[in-house]
Image (cartoon, rainbow over all chains, first blue to last red; front, side, top):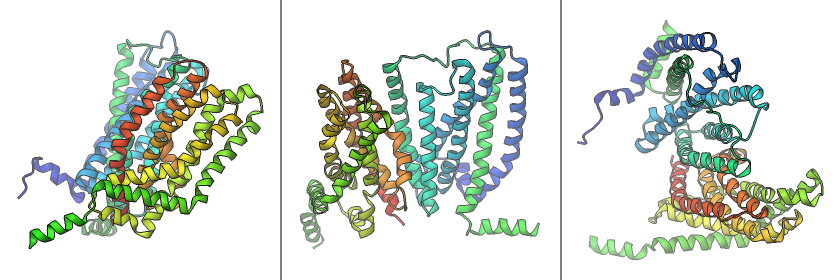
Amino acid sequence: MSRSYLPHWVHWLGSPPNFYRFAGALRPWLFWSTLVLGAIGLYGGLVLAPSDYQQGDAYRIIFIHVPCAWMSLFAYGCMAAAALIALVWRIKLAEVIAMECAPVGAAFTFVTLVTGSLWGKPMWGTWWTWDARLTSELVLLFLYFGVIGLFNAIEDRRRAARAASLLALVGIVNLPIVHYSVVWWNTLHQGSTVNLFGQSHISADMLWPLLLMALATHLYFFASVLNRARVGLLAVEGGKDWARGLVAESANA
Amino acid sequence: MVALVQSETTVQTPGALTAARALLRRELLLAWRRRNDALFPVLYAIIVTALFPFALGPEPQLLARVSGGVLLVTVLLAMLPTLESMFRGDLEDGSLEQMLLAPQPLALLALARIAGYWLSTTLPLIVVAPLLALLLHLPLDVLPVLLAALLLATPLLALLGAVLAALTAATRRSAILLALMLLPLAVPVVIFAAGAVAAAQSGLPHSAPLLWLAAALVLALVLAPLACAAALRIAVET
C-alpha cells in the first residue's frame, strides 16, 4: 500500500468530474472579480493617474502592456509546470491544463507585442526595433505557436498533449538561453539604445492601478484556463459516464 | 537453472557501446547506399546562396558583409527537410520499435542515430561551405572561423532538431511544423555562429562566441539524447 504525501483534496481535485464541477463553481467569481478589479484599475490608470512628465499621456498604455508582458511569462511557467506534472505522473488533468494554458499565454504575448509596438511608435519613432526584450517576446510567441501547432498535429489527444508538454519543457530550458544570447547579440552590435524600464521609481499614483491590473490579468488567466480546461476535459473524457450524464442533464433541462 | 539462463542472456546481449556502434554503422551504410540523397541539401544550399546576389545586387562589399549570416541561415534551412524525415523511415519499417525494445539505453542509441545523421547529411554541407563563401566574397582569412562556427553549430542544430523530429515522427506533413518549432530554439545558435563570423570579419576577437557555442554543444550532447528518447517513447507508445 503506497502512502500519499499529498493532502486528500489534491487527489479529489485531480479527478475530472470533480474538477469540472469545481471549475464551474469558481468560474463566475473569477470572471466577476476580473471585471471589477480591471475596471477600477483602468479607471485609476487612465483617469486618476497623473501624466508622465516625459512621456505625457502615451505612457498610459503601460497599464495594459506591462501586466500582459508579466502574464506572457507567467502563463509559460504555468504551462511548463503542468507539463512536467503531466509527463512525470501522467495525470490527465495536468495534460489538459498545460495545453489550455498555451492559447491564453499566446494571446497575452500577442497583446504585449501589439501594445508595445503602438507605444513604440510615438516614443521611439518606430513600430519595431530588434531590442533584446522585444525579440525575446517574439521568440516566446513562436514557442507558444509551436506547442499549439504540435498539439493540433497529432490525432490522439493524450499523445498530442504529452508530445507538446515535452516541447514546452524543452522551450523553458531554452528560453533563458534565448534571452541572454539576444542581450549579448544586441549589445555587440549597437549597444543598448532603448531601456524600457528607465524610470525605476514609479509614482504611487501609477503603481496601484498597475498592480490592480496585474491582479485582474492573473484572475482572468485562471478563469480562462479553468473555463477552457472544462471543455478540454469534456473532449478527452467524452465517452465516460460522467460526461454522458452531463449531456443528458443539459438535454433534459 | 535460472542462473544459467540469465548468464546466457547476459552473454548474448551486446554492450551499449557495441550497439551504438552497430547502429551508427548501419546509418552510414544506408546513407552510402542512397548517396544521391545526400546531394539534395547541398544543391538546395547552392541554389539559395546563388539567389542572394540576384536579390541584393552583385556588389562584392555588400555580399561580403552579409555572407556569414546568409550561409548560416542557408545551412539551417537546408537541414530542415532532412531533419523532418529523420525518424520517419525507422518508424514505418518498425526498426524504431526495435530500438525502443532493445536492452541498451535508448538515449545512447538516439545519440548514435543523430551522429549518423550529422555525418551523412550535414558534413557534405560543411564541405561545400567554402565554395559558397567564395561565391559571396567572404574574405579568405575569415573562412576558418566560418568553418569552426559551422562545425560547432550544425551538431547543435542536429541535436535540437532530432528532439523535435522525434516529437513529430508520428504526424503527417510536419515540415512547416518542424520549422515553427525549431526556429525559436535555433535563435541562440544563429546569433553566436553568425556573431563569431561577423566579429572575425571586423577584426574583433571571435573566440568568445565560439566558446559559447562549444558550451551549448556540450550541454546539448548530454541533454538532447535524453529528451529525444522521451520524445520517441511518446511517438511510439499507443
